[in-house]
Length: 280
Image 1 (cartoon, rainbow, N blue to C red):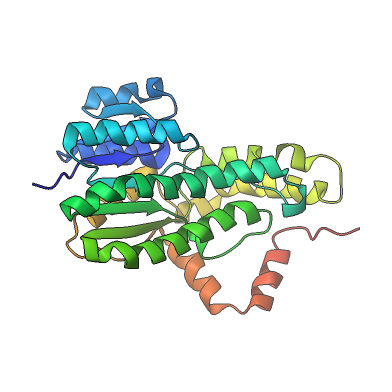
Image 2 (cartoon, rainbow, N blue to C red):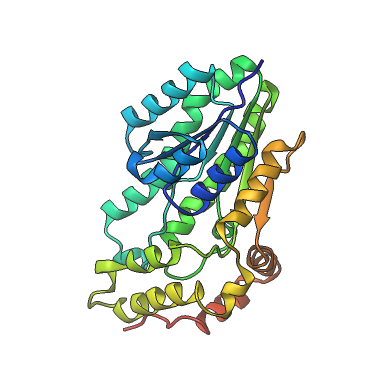
């Protein structure tokens, strides 16, 4: 029989942790991973099998996939969850931080797909779940680098869905909106040196402030907690014919549709009402 074992990246907190917790409670064989295996003690107590996995390290990725394959025959379900947000005006973000953002959010995701697909093809069964964002369908000022990674995840998922369908592999894209986790605090803190004095200093400080506040203010009511995303993931991987995309939370549905209907000039004007315009 085909392996249906689940491998999840980025399980130390948030969506990854909630998904691992729900799926193991549903009776799935779950391999929960994080850069530090010690951060997974709670999931291990629940019955998850835990592995160290750093999606920016080739040896680490290969070792994790090999461990699951040797135990189960194949990774049946890959959930690419590891990721974070880098904020700041594009010109002000150091290029090494840009590279690190893409290594985690994009290149690691691609490589994990490449590593699990041969055995998925061989058993003619597999599910690849990519955690994107509503930020892959629209762009907020000060978030260009992060949004670029999520736009990339959209394109990769669309191409891959077509390419592997004939081998019995489904590719599913999850597009969360506001999820109340530490994500907002991490994104705000990522502005870092980009908020130092310079032509974008005021703008970057306002971006950091707005990013932190949106997860705690009135808009948070349009969001949800990680368990909401976990339930959607569970439903998607259990579906015989899963949808290509699953927006999650009212904020995702609202913002994606709003952006789709608004001309660029109107969207830009709306953004100017929310963010200071950098200028001399």
